[in-house]
Structures are given as C-alpha cells and as structure tokens.
Amino acid sequence: MMTDPIADLLTQIRNANAIGAKRIRMTASRIKVGVAQILQEEGFIQSYEVEPGEPASRLVVQLKYGPDGEHVIRKIERVSKPGRRVYSPAARIPPVLRGLGIYILSTPRGIVSDRTARELNVGGEILCRVV
Image: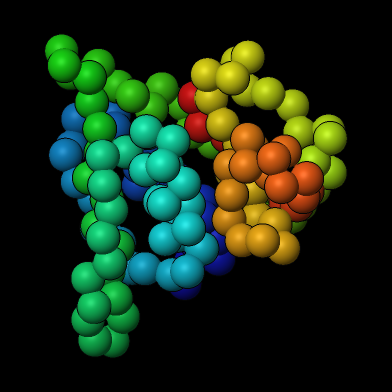
C-alpha cells in the first residue's frame, strides 16, 4: 500500500533521471497530474499524458534532457511530508536558487508553482522543490 503518492512520483522521476530513462509510467491521480502539469509548464519535463484504463488510469511522463544528455532536473525533493506538513503564506515563499528552481504548492486555487502563487497572492502547502 502506498501512503504518499507525491513522494512515489518524485522518487520515480529521480530514479528515471539517474539512469537516463526517457519516460516513466505510474498510476494516475489528480495531484500527480497537477504536479506533472507544473513540471511541464516550468520546462522540467518534456510532456505528460494520462492513459485511461481499468481499473486505474496511468500517468506517462516524458523526461527532458539537454542537447548533450545533461539532466534538466538536478534535484527534486519532497518538502511537506505526511508526518510534517509545511505551509507558507504567499509573501513568505522563498525563491529557489534565486529563481532557477521552483516550489510546487497545493493551494485553494489548485496545484501551482511558487511564481504563480505569488502572482495570485495565495499560500498553501509546499509539496516539493525542484532544481
């Protein structure tokens, strides 16, 4: 039984990135699709799609690498965990590596990046950090 689907998603991305895999597949959920959408919008992954299926849909993520095979995602880690939730108001969301990385947040307006959260002036739970 999986207790933390976000940590599972991040671990699969981290492991696939370490071996240079082009794509990963896993069971889909709304929050995983939201995180994948933010990663695509911010340019950390090439694309994602949801394949319908029974009993569960599958999320397919195409990872992105540079022209010489360098990793676009250098580090991806969970910030808020089931045992220790981390929340932040919009004004207190710190920049990641002076704007080179992002935080992904769960807010009342949905799953958004730290830049979008500041623009919308909404805080929320900091799910993960991507550099």
